[in-house]
Image 1 (tube, rainbow, N blue to C red):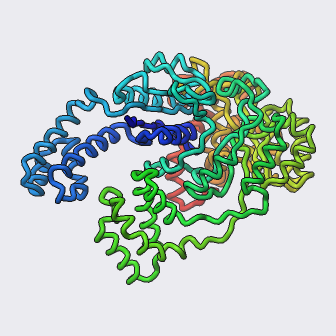
Image 2 (image 1 turned 135 degrees about the horizontal axis):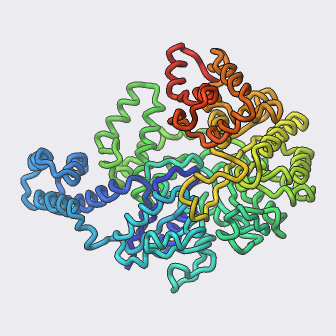
Length: 626
């Protein structure tokens, strides 16, 4: 018998779709299972499930009424049991059986009777970073009783592999650690290697959440890393280095089933270490990423129609089609045509995802096709390849032949990790080599808050700015704050502070990054303004009150910044020993309880200026803050 399988991603913000769940969807559909994907509010999931069950009962006993038109009233009654909702529904039908079903499912929901007879045969829950701990644990514990057999609750992903014992302790579920790369991990009677399966993009259509990066091909061509950096989780996640995983068939399957994607995003942790590196690049080129082949956005309307005809994911594609209809209406410049299309949709109840039916969509497929043709006559676009986890500067700087090979694909950006100042020599050589071979766009990761100190980060940022100017390249620096995701004292949050850092210095860096969306680009004048021309100015920034950093222009113009600096810099060494530890805590909620020194308190006053107060003052003066 086909199983009912639920795939769940906790409702945290995530840039990339959950690749593991997308592979599991492919796997279970290969086995003939009924797959559902969910990411959203936990309580709403239950309400929707109860509503769907009630809907089936209502259509069975009174099929002549379109119960989907009364969705809001039914949901309200299920959740709250309000008499006015029941009265309204009794006006819809005189069927005593229908009304009894409506009352039954209200009780069914209110008394949590759905827990007595769970509907799901298997529930797979992914995990991401451990600082989403509370949300992740709540999600696992919420869905666990919804599975018929607790042993069929499968938890995997990053957090599950990094701290499996902690997850088991708080949920009672023993998570799966590592990769599904051997076959038979979930079902002993088959040897399908789940990790090598193509992604099921259709499940992304089932949810409201839109991943910022959702329109690329995603995959791995290697697994693991030859390095064992102490700050890195890869040795736990991918303990064995695999030098080659073919990807061409995955890409071709995705293209044929879901339509072409523009870019290729590879999450390999150290592709340069592969003995099959040339083979990897050649395969990427053969997949249409050769720098010459352009991307033309496919007609998503026709893809959705085909998906419905093939029965790939009716739930997801009905939702997708409603978005297509909304797009169509938004593109109409002629009011008469727009009204005609709107009336056609309304007539067939296709203007709402909850009333739309698959048969109605397919019935009107040919009618709407000509209207979508001009929408999808798009100009060809350049495609790019992104080794998103970065490449190893220590290998790259010694391998001009690999740099040259990289130029055979449209790599953009080239990401090179620059984890500390000690790596300056190989890092700088790697950047120069890349520039020499014509790679002009780079976006490099800078780890901080580990064993470095603030000035280490400053020098790395400054070096990138200098290299940009000298080599006429673009290097976006991405400072990445270190979190010990497997440390019992810190893995549940982002509170860890490295031994050479403090909360104020961390906050100062983040305040600058917030205004630049986390990246520092080229431009010496901008860098000097943001971080300082020298170490002394950089340390001034670190000690500067947060509001004065965020709204720098405003406070510089009204003289507040100069007054703070005059007060701060005039403090004696003795008084600096009083104020520095206070500033380092970055807690200025009750400064009078921390010291009675008047000079120190006068300086601390500037740290009590709230960003909200600054915003009000700026808006009242009609100023623009860059």
